[in-house]
Image 1 (cartoon, rainbow, N blue to C red):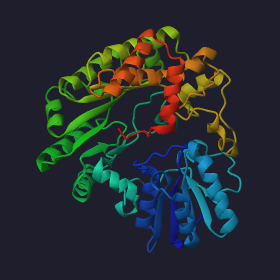
Image 2 (image 1 turned 60 degrees about the horizontal axis):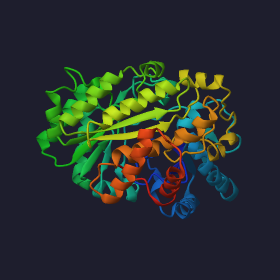
Image 3 (image 1 turned 90 degrees about the horizontal axis):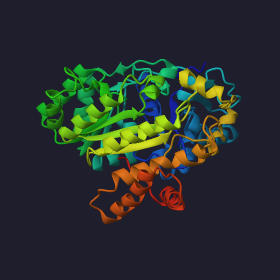
Image 4 (image 1 turned 120 degrees about the vertical axis):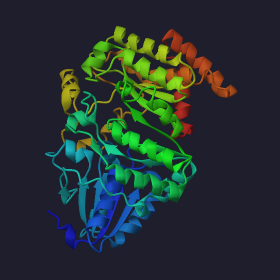
Length: 450
């Protein structure tokens, strides 16, 4: 094990996870690690580089490693392709530098053979209670000032949805102490004066007392930013998010809530262990509309065991939610992406689907496999029919543009929306126009933070 107490010059690196950078997004895991090392290693000189937020990342990386004793990489499976060339560069040019890897991939695959790429592989999580803003990339700080800041009030989720990585890792909700959250809000507001704050929790209202304290604080301080976050639809009930609490949320600046709707089929929802019903979804979304809050509904398709009839139930739920008006945004249905471990992956394996069994197998795995991105069109899941593999990746673009754009005040958006709404009403997810539009969007349009 590397003795970090005797290593002072440290570089923590977060590489991109696809050809498209997640510009402006905060990479909490890598940032937390860099902040933790800076705080706990006395006399340390810690640097943090995030490829998503550096226009000249490779040049900065090569310059930074010249005077570094240890480089740590934060790894998801999708980042391996972009991390391995950097590791090889260090090995070839600076063989004395120690290299460690941590993050979700090592946690999910603790027994995998990582070869000679790393001197140490960390399969546990470091404390996530320190975020040093001096390490935050300048591009992210600029987004904080001009568009929206991000504040985290809790990590993970205690619910065990079968498709979620929290279920695979058997994680529970870990709340940040409310005193730290309020101090973070005060600092971010004073330092960046953001027009909006995104409370980037998986379930902001899981600790309802904490949520109430944050909302009361915002009102007391008379902060002018708006805010958005994620919630389960099941929180919309008496004593939690109800007709007494919703006006306070609006007063404090709440303008958007994000829901994991997933499916309109109760059988599929039960299979996913979602713990909700389509009726609860409708109620939560209608309550948002009632109080002028945007409701973003995230939905999946291509789920193992899902039938054509159950998929149509999802489409019909989408129709109902969309009928509530322009405050409802439909996000999906996006194609399901399997994670190793857990109930749903066991179902996936029955169909013959396999993930790489070696570390090097992951380097090029996502070149031919879905990464959970809206641009995934080359899908070949064995539990889907040939037709479903060809059409389901395009359901998202038809739904998103057909239902979200058709009532836009922008003439071009409205024309695009009317075209795709026609496709949606026919349940026609093919056609050269759909594929051509997806090609253009992928090639020329940058995905926004919204």
